[in-house]
Image 1 (cartoon, helix red, strand yellow):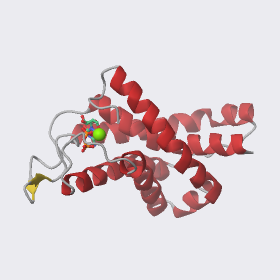
Image 2 (tube, rainbow, N blue to C red; image 1 turned 135 degrees about the vertical axis):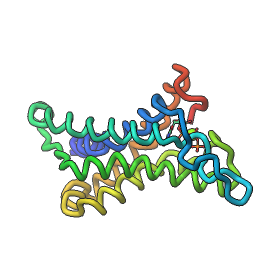
Image 3 (spheres, helix red, strand yellow; image 1 turned 90 degrees about the vertical axis):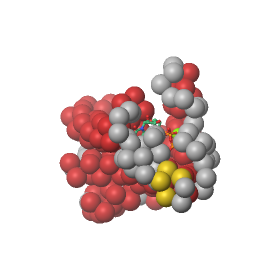
Image 4 (cartoon, rainbow, N blue to C red; image 1 turned 45 degrees about the horizontal axis):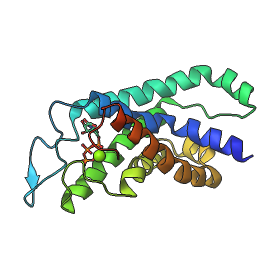
Amino acid sequence: MIGSLVATAFWAMLPAYVPNNAAVLAGGGRPIDGGRTWGGRRVLGDGKTWRGTAVGTLIGVLLALGLNAINGPVSATLGVSLPTFPIQAAVGLALGAMLGDIGASFIKRRSGRERGAAFPGLDQLDFVVGALLVAFLVDADWFLSTFTLGIIVVILVITPLLHVSTNIIAFKIGAKEEPW
Ligand code: CTP
Ligand code: MG
């Protein structure tokens, strides 16, 4: 029971988890805010680039389509009916994750935190909130049939754990400048 909830939650959120990590690897180039400041601070900062956002979103969508392709055998093996991603849901999750992360950078800059500064809580859940919100906006029927209350609770528990561990790995292998 709990195992199938965790498997479903993880599967449903993979297209939202991977974009941030892909952006870390693809980042660079022009910052989204074009270097502009607001109130003496950068609007978003150099850590939010067009390339990172575009590549992250694309990877998330492609991943969702890949998961759809292997859904049958994986669901059968696990004995769980894993969700499939309509294209709009795939885009919603991936783009929403990137937008949530961008929104968090906006909040961090307004609160005086420089690029790369940690903001515990926000760092771990910004992309979850963004992904779920945008997925709901683009496909409410799919969202409501996929994200039951139990699934959302599991997501809120496992995401920070996954986020912390993958970021420590990214830091150790030199892909990220800070371990958060
Ligand atoms: N990145 C990007 N575009 C995005 C998100 C991330 O290019 N939309 C890349 C940047 O190279 C960034 C790295 O991924 O430095 C790590 O992402 P993140 O931790 O979100 O950014 P930070 O540099 O820590 O900046 P911030 O304080 O704004 O979160
Ligand atoms: Mg950061």
